[in-house]
Every structure is written in C-alpha cells, then in structure tokens.
Length: 156
Image 1: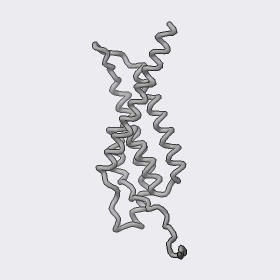
Image 2: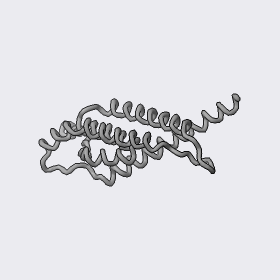
Image 3: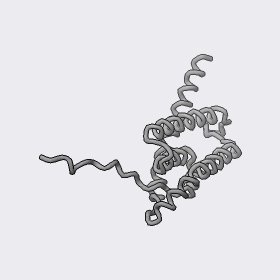
Image 4: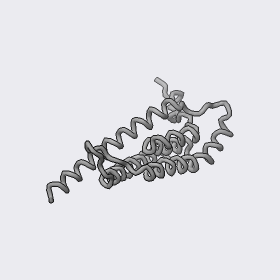
C-alpha cells in the first residue's frame, strides 16, 4: 500500500465573516459578538487556534463576571426583576461593537483583496453562534451571581 500520494492537506479554514456584520451582532449581543471577533481573527490568520481558544475563554470569564457584578449592583424592581442602568448597557454594547470593527477591518480588507471570488461567512451562522455564546455566558453570570448572593447571605 502506497501512502506518499495521500498526504493530508491542512484543515480548510472557513471564510471570515464581514467585520460590519460581526460588529452589528456585537452591538446587540456583546458577549457573543466578542467571541465571533476572536474567531474571525483566527479565520483571518491573526492568531492560531490555541490563542483563539484561550482568548475566548478569557472573554467568557470577563463577561460572565462583569455581568454578575453588574447584576449585583443593580437595584431590583418589584417582583425581583433587575432594573439595569441603560447607560451602562449602551456603553458596553457600543464599545464592544466599535472595538470589534476596528480590530477586524484592516486584516479583512487584506483578505478580501486576495480572495476576490470568495464570499464572507454566513451571517446566519454568525448570529446563531453569537446567540449561543451569549446565552452560555448569561447562564454562567447568573450562577455566579446566585452563588455570591448565597455566600453573602449566609455570612450575615
């Protein structure tokens, strides 16, 4: 059996998503949009898969802990529903979207110039991935918040 002609090619990297699309997603789903930004940078060759995974883990922890802190500092309305400060949420959303766009745009333009016939990745898949990560991060933030409340409540 000959194996010299059966060498495996490197894993095909899917085309990146448009920075505009990822930034719009980040505007409405900041945690998921941040994860998409890292994946896009990996697709564009700005970082290897190991660095991308590490960065995604850091992003998930920062958003989960940040949201847990924000939730703990938020006054509760009647019925125990949090009343988030709209200025804080707006700042997080716009800041994430702008940073996402600025970090992707130069490398995407390079990619676009060398891949004129290749279409960017599907926005539908990007939205689904961002929604999934946003829900996951929100669950971790909620669990963190409730654990802190239990610990603080039992110590009083």
